[in-house]
Length: 484
Image 1 (cartoon, helix red, strand yellow):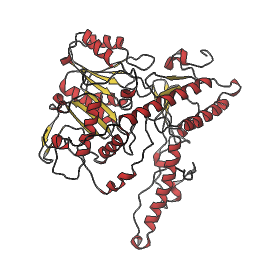
Image 2 (cartoon, helix red, strand yellow):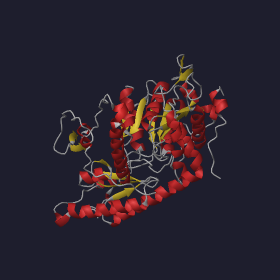
Image 3 (cartoon, one colour):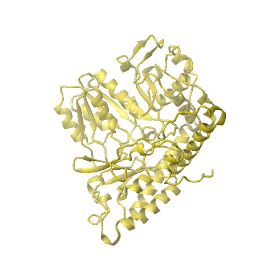
Image 4 (spheres, rainbow, N blue to C red):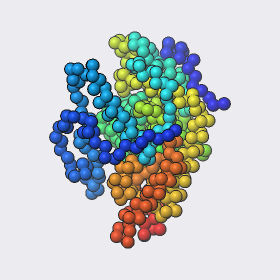
């Protein structure tokens, strides 16, 4: 029987102890429903794209949203009687709904599970639910969901093997906030510590380093994207007189690589760093909730000398708003926590006000699916990821899939419109598809068939050649003319 989230701990914690709608045409013009003209804007080029150079490589940024924004207009004096304004807004929202349906059908490049149904929670949208302050101490604001939040935190504490009295955590607004909090705790524990993170870590880690004015060492990676512990050792020894704050990736952003936590700890210990001289934050944004259900995967556990773990709630689990979970050792939180008289509570969070709806969505999903439900979804994702990788290779397309990952990396499509259509995440010569529970075999087949058809025109008659991705994926995964 699937385990459910236990909420009876609330008293102890808080009190001190089917069919698809018609697809919106691509040429949707918001100006058709907005009578007032949009203000003039600066456009980068005819395609409304912005280009920027990074080193020697030119990247394409997204379109200028000012060219399609929906202007806010003042209601007419008689709108209360005519209802014209309501009808006008209803029309815009109906068009937007069709657009969402279309874009969801072609969503592959970002790690969001779009397969969820929270209709039963719609009634709660009538309330402004705010969990401001410490999750475990009630504030004077009574419209909160702390009982759900603490139940969710207890579930993750059990998953990562830490006792209730030994952890502190909260539901964040996104995965980045979890990383900002984890690195901040490490910085507060070791004010003169050096932050170590692989060069393939999420950009929020380096954002944290800039925000907190921390000395940061970027560590090289292996071809898989996993941290190179030989380079990590060299950089540790160059700063042996300073404590170490380490970000360990439980799934890198582009390749889905999982850093070897045990090897990182061993590297620290073998080079003279005692447990009171380093702090490890585990960024498990996507795979932090998948790894526990993968056989032979390295275990993320507070029984090991780690300081904090964060995951995103809107990625593998699926949630209509961005959110996340951050768990840290209680012993480290006192350096951040402060009494706030205005709240009649304590606060050690990054944000003040926090979305009180998010914990309810997470609680609802955990109760409905449980451990067994997540295990089935993880197996489905891994199976479908292998299917995609094999189909790409069979079609002569360079591709790679890390053993513990559902992120399939392949050669970057030549056409940026194709990239936008399927919402692919790209970096240099590579792109990826993140296979989530909402990504079906039928969707993968549609993508594959379209990609193969497009490639036949991109590279017809030998006018152009597919990119060589040996430097990114290894020669064994490269299907260019030189390596196939």
